[in-house]
Image (cartoon, rainbow, N blue to C red; front, side, top):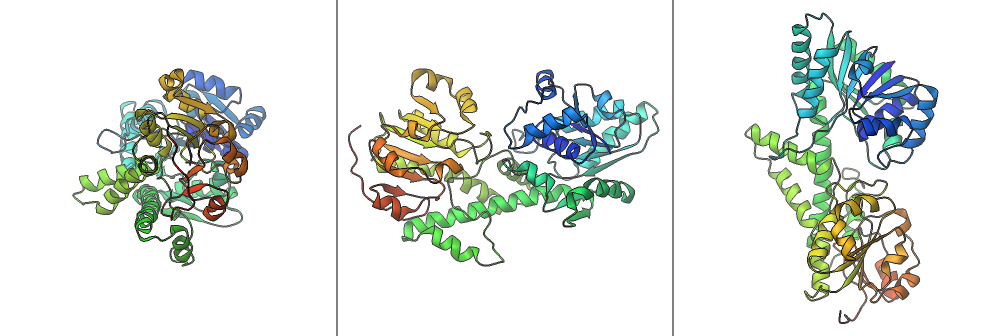
Length: 453
């Protein structure tokens, strides 16, 4: 099929590359000239495993092209995907200015019938607004061509987005026109050969499903984090509790890992947007407010634990951080728990030595003064950053941090104190190696005498 994807951000690039992989002819429209130039060379502007090889392969095959010109992108398109950003507005609602601007541009430019699909995460009713904008533009031009608007929310996880797209656990099509829904079903058929999990529903239901899914997953995370806080007071190990409740099929094992909070581009933004939607409808979103509040609190726990360990005297201490991105497999720092901890440590006069496999550049851009002063040091080596450290904090559970040489780490540290923000380590083993171990919702194990800074 002939496809146009508008927006070369995370969702747009992954979608364009994967549609091209299945033999479709794809043009991706992006207004940023510098980004288009990079993409035309096969350079991915974001870190996502497997994305750059796909871009290079299908640029070479001619199945994928990039352009700044909307008219060129939509000239022959049967399906046009809108994949532009919907960031949080000042009041927490989704900012639809980019989506609606695209709708206006389409109304002013479309020359043929097509299906316009909202791939962006948008509130209920956005599809109808997009259709109105497009049709108003067509009417002004006295252009007679049928345009159907549909919703096809993405369910991609950063770090595994290519696999998620190529082998989806479900594809949701929200479309009130049966013929257009059938076209979209055929588009996705190659991705669903091993299991038919395409769900057709109304346009509004599809829009809401995306928000409901992310809000529910965020709720699971906040719930287990709240239970971890209670476990910490009752001398109970949340990891044992997690295994106990996760074996119940009604609960399951996913998203019930206690940690230092969730971040990223989706959960925080979508929870806020759903709260705002509820407020606009006169509904009190008590559960969603609690989810957001719990997560904000969770991001402060590691700093509180460090301050408690050092009896409030953090000035002059050296703290090593393992992991800065909001999750493994990405360089994305949006709403990352690491930023809350970094800000607090730097404000308290702590010298921070941090390691991340791919997010160092983004952190360097965010903290230029701390880098210039030497208060913040960045490295790709987990062993370099622990040298002389008074404490080590695990924030992002990258694979290279899962089984390090803990005897080597202990020898390099000034004090063998480890704060495990993701509960990935064996507390008893570390205590036997001479560490003081502290996790999230887990009893502290081991001993370490605090030395003067």
